[in-house]
Image (cartoon, rainbow, N blue to C red):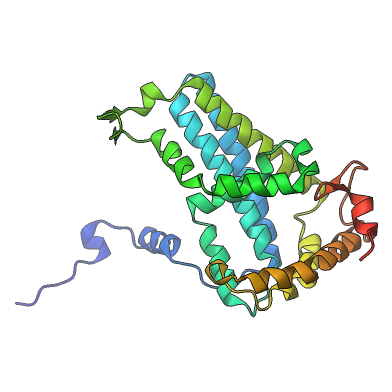
Length: 274
């Protein structure tokens, strides 16, 4: 007698719910529009604000382990805005680089690494080389950061001390509050940029038009060679200056006089000689 595959009705599974779940698990491999990227950046920022708000509520109620977890998850959402922003600069013809960047969107370590630069105080941006050096050091530690985030959720065996680790009793208020403070710093910076207009469709479209051609032949991260970096170094600064000059001339962003680009006052940056 032939076996019969049970239907969704037989198993009690709602067909619509099943299809919705399968759609969520499906892997996107296409190419987003500038409008989609702009929407995604703003959605990530909104979610990060909610996560920080909830982390503060938990910390006030002495639920430090979960508060720390939410604060670190908020940092990942902050990092996702930077991943999406970087994808604006990828031409449709370079699908390998697009796929490489899209993989970062779901990587805990990559999202944390991308978030790092937004968690620094404004004064740090006066020293761009120091920022780059600190970012490189942080990238080497992001795996540890993910382990710490998980330590706020799960009981685990602490092999170095031959005992169980219980997040409810071992994550302190200082640990939670420091992560909340860091997340709020990054959120504050990106919120200002959003208010100024940097994540609008108009600005992102200009960024794509000017800077995407620079990445026509750039391979995914694992294949980047010194000559690729040299190529970017030769053309990117001029293109970047052109982008900032154009968006300010068109009044697409609203910049305070003390706004700095790469540690340089914005007027000085866009007026610099080629």
